Length: 193
Image (cartoon, rainbow, N blue to C red; front, side, top):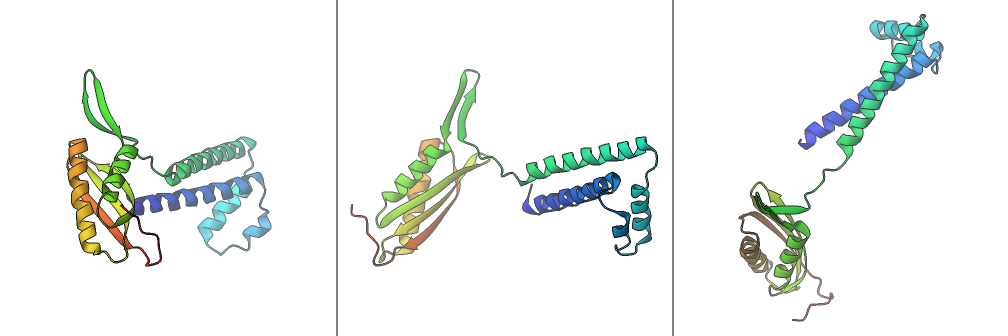
């Protein structure tokens, strides 16, 4: 689900939750009838609010409260599920057959990517993230290079070495590599090799 759909679902759940909370408050008598007069005059709204505050049969009042409680509970559950971040895969399955499967952890691939990046000339620090996308991999690396290094060449060297090493390690293609190069300040410590 893309971000627009998640935002719309969140807004819908919040709206549904507020309507059910208002219905519960009116049905239980928590909101006095005098406050309804201060609402904007919209005849269908005024009529439905008057009906909610004057539910005479006790059974109808109980059913209204029960339905509003169930809808509020469902909207809270859906809202929590929608706002919870998606779980990342922990392992990349390399092969699977009837005898078992072979997998490698994304944490291991991240360490391999950082090690390969650090072995390149003029790289002081590297932080990488490796994700799967279908049958291929996507890699993002933030590296800090020496202050007087050529950022373009350092980035290309890291990209080339990452692609070849990860494809060799995993046996899958690397679809995309994003390398963000930041030059260290001239006063920062430089890594000595």
